[in-house]
Every structure is written in structure tokens, then in C-alpha cells.
Image (cartoon, rainbow, N blue to C red; front, side, top):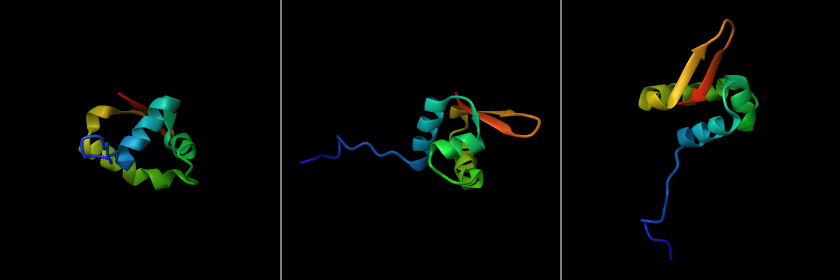
Amino acid sequence: MITKEKLVFRTWEVICLEKLAEIGKSSAKKWSEALGMNHPNSLAKVIKRITNSMPERLLITKGSRASYYEVA
């Protein structure tokens, strides 16, 4: 039997940050492809929620054409 103390709940934002830590610094397109998504816009709301709720965990570097993301 599993007790509540042994359960670890992971949100979609935490799962996305773990995948970004695996692949390193990347654009939204490469990050979404690593998660198995077809289009980078599907990750846009997740990025917005991460920057609003836990901005200290995500570093955003603005490039000339695209932004690059990495885990802080």
C-alpha cells in the first residue's frame, strides 16, 4: 500500500524543466521537440506559467530571432 508520504507529485512545468535540464540550452522549438510536441507554440503557455510562478528556475536569453532557455 502506498502512503501519502511516498507519493511525489510532479506538475507539467516541473517535467518540462527536467527535460530542459537534460538537453541543455535550447530554443522553444528544440525543447518542444524533445518533449514530443509538434509545434513550439504548444509550449508557450507552459513557459509563461514557469516565468510567472518560478522565474528563478528559468534563464531566458533573447537572441536576434529566437529566445533560448536554460535551467538556472
